[in-house]
Amino acid sequence: MEEKAGGCQAQSHEKRRKTPHKRMTGMTDQEWMRLALEEAEAAAAKGEVPVGCVIVDASGRAIARGHNARETLADPTAHAEMIAVKEAAARTLSWRLDGATAYVTLEPCAMCAGALVHARVARVVYGCADPKGGAIDTMFGIGRDPRLNHRFEVVSGVLGDECSSALRRFFAELRTRGG
Ligand code: ZN
Image (cartoon, helix red, strand yellow):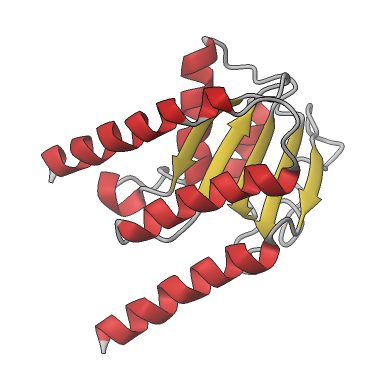
């Protein structure tokens, strides 16, 4: 199990190295979300709930990608955003991701929205809302609440239909397999 998880990580790392640095400024929110969706698909391929995240720095360069790995890592905090935020911070050697944009296929939960506040990202762009746990618009206003010491701009509904149908497909398949 341990070994398998390591293998998966190494593989997706390789993939990451190819993409981000070629993609420079000038990409639209939709195009970045397309990459986040690719991450979501990578999660689904491992039997993980398909949620993906891409973090783009202030100069318009992808500095991290991540997808949900809760089952693979047996880690309740292994959400796409947490993985991407940690990678972005490690890569830039800074906990502050000033000016960065996080593209997430699903509205972040309270934990991830909190992490994005702590990381001081400038923008959060998400695909579909999460009626059961969305903490940016749906259930809470993390990132917008003036009581917090940092706020970010929020854009929602970017490729929303595709993001939600990836989730629907995954759960429909799960139900079929479960009989
Ligand atoms: Zn989360």
